[in-house]
Structure formats: structure tokens, C-alpha cells
Image (tube, rainbow, N blue to C red; front, side, top):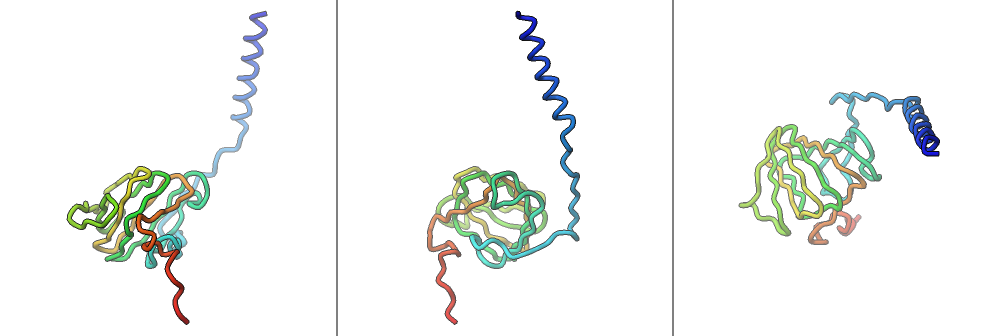
Length: 161
């Protein structure tokens, strides 16, 4: 009786291995800077940023990677995310601070090659010193909650016509 159980289990394992071996491999993808499609940043972030999605969909569950171009002097007020946010500065200089209000004296400068992880739900904020090319990756959906609701660009009154 015991032999039958072991052989049955081995049969299931062999069937699972065969199924995996027959599954198509994910497509190999290479993205060059010239192939990126840039567009405006999401409405949840202040105007002026442009983004290009490299992989995944930041609005959906699952991993994503994007690039963002932030102009000099660009500020993202104190906010937090329900998932970890990973930042890599590819070019330029920006400052990052932690807390519920901007304290310029405590901000740390991140230059090209710098990396930061903002674990959920750490309150943080960003200000660029120069134009910045930033790579962001994490697990979606990407959402942002501002510490001060008045800082949220989605709640700004529509412009008068």
C-alpha cells in the first residue's frame, strides 16, 4: 500500500514537471532609451513630470518599472504609499526627506547612481535640485496618499475658463 502512494506522488510530480517544461517561456524584452514612449505623469502627482512605463502596469496588481523625468525645482509634498517604493536616480540630483512636513535641513541628496527604498507607509517627500531621470519600481497598484489633502493635485479646483 505504501508503494502505491509513493508511486502516485511521483507520478503527480512528473506530470507537474512536464507541464512546466511545456509552458512557453516569457518573451525576452530589451528596452532602449530611444524606444521609450513618454507621456504626462499621473494626475496624482504634481504637473511637470513625464513618465515612460518599462514593464508591467503601475495601475494594476503586480510588479512594474517606470522611468520619470522631473524638472529642476519639482516638489512632491509629504505623502505615503500602501506598497514599498524603490527609487534609483539615473541622472541629476534630488533631495528626499522623511516625515509629515517638509524640513529642507534634514533632506538627503541623491545623485546619479543613488538608490532608496521607501517602505510602506513611510511618509516622505521629494524636491529636485536639477533635472532628474528617475527609475521607480515596485508592486502595483501604485497609489499615493498625501499627508495634507490640500496638496493632492486631484483635489485642486478646476481652472476658470
